[in-house]
Amino acid sequence: MLTEGMIQTHPETRRRIIHVDMDAFYAAVEMRENPSLRGRPLVVGGDPDRRGTVATCNYEARKFGIHSAMASKTARKRCPEVLFLKPRFELYREVSAEIREIFLDYTNRVEPLSLDEAYLDVTRCRLFGGVATDIARDIKRRILEHTKLTASAGVSYNKFLAKIASDMNKPDGLTVIRPHEAKALVSQLPIGKFFGVGPVTEKRMKELGIHTGADLQRWSLSRLQPLFGKHAEYYHQAAFGIDVREVEPNRPRKSVGSETTFDKDLSDLEEMLSQLRLRAREVALNLQERQLTGKTVTVKVKFSDFTQVTRSYSFNHPLTSYRQMIEVLPQLLHHAVSVRSRAVRLLGVTVSNLVRSDEETIAQRSLL
Ligand SMILES: [Mg+2]
Image (cartoon, rainbow, N blue to C red):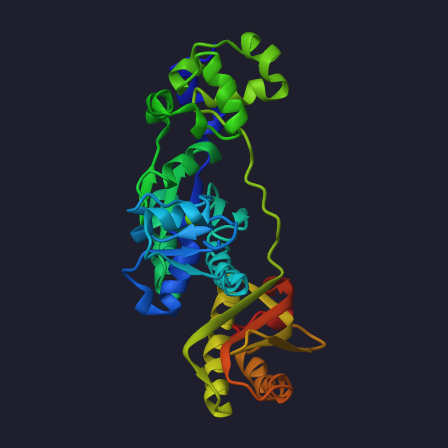
């Protein structure tokens, strides 16, 4: 049987996990793109005249009792003036990638769950003296600064509790669950909120009289096992605030990049070039901080119709200066935009084929 003392000394409590969840993500992106939508009840996804369900709705719509996964028809019944928008996944993916880049500045151990949420293991992050709450606050600040969108963050020592925490003070929340708080908090948690407990398991648990974490705590592992098989151990541990699942990053850093979406599309080449130089400067700074350099420079151009073109140039040796990087930009930009004559909504610069700059004697000097 697990006891409270065991939980607080359990090696599991040494990790620092952050769960970041964007607030009403698709709807928030749509409101950012079109400020006249602000203040109006809004649903993204679904069509009230046909079948279909709400993908995301903003907080104004939630006031009417509308929520995600609700049938569109029900949503319109609850609020006849609700506005239905077609989802623009390419746009959401673009914003999601920008947010991902921010995460990677704190740790490589990032596990995205969807376009709008991710787990970060910041146990080894030394920024802010390694204080996970301060790291989470800074991540939220940078997301807001860079994307004009708010996120809610949960901080704890495992994935289960970090995710519970991020949901506790939405929107724009920052919630911490500390090891000594975990048992009491989990005791009160409705069983349907436990990770891995879907509607079917929830029904089953309730039939057994398990409605909350406290109820689950009273069941021994040997009693749970015949009922829940291989999941029994997870449920048993979770009841005491223990979750040994690792944050599983699905992408090592292969490049360092910076990109920006403009408020107004650009059509002047000189203006584009100066924007690219700003991006390149940021990339150079970023590489320097990480003691990295690379051989390949890529320019990315996204047009107003969301089509995208990338053009790359690879040097024989890793870059040794910022100047080298900006020298190839005019040519790359020219090749990228010559195929289209449309206005440009996004520009980015990426350096890939990375090597550690301290392993390259030639790159010992600063990139700047
Ligand atoms: Mg979300």
